[in-house]
Image 1 (tube, rainbow, N blue to C red):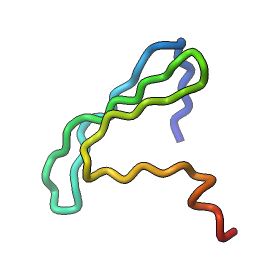
Image 2 (image 1 turned 120 degrees about the horizontal axis):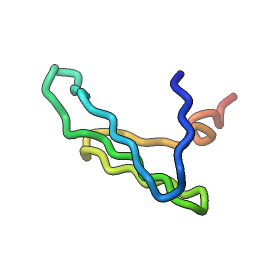
Image 3 (image 1 turned 90 degrees about the vertical axis):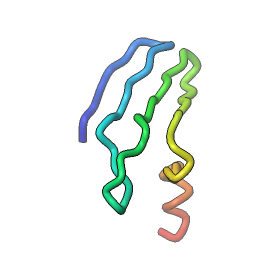
Length: 58
C-alpha cells in the first residue's frame, strides 16, 4: 500500500492502467478537497466502490 499526504484541493493521477484485454485505459485522476471529499475521474468501465459497502456481509 502506498500512503500519501496531500494538500487540500490537489489531485494525483494513476497512469499505465489496462483493461482485462490489455487495452490501455485513460488515466485516473483523484481529486482531494479541503472538506474530506474525494472526486474520481475514471473511464466508465472502472467500477468504484466504497470499501464499507463491499464489507456488508462480514
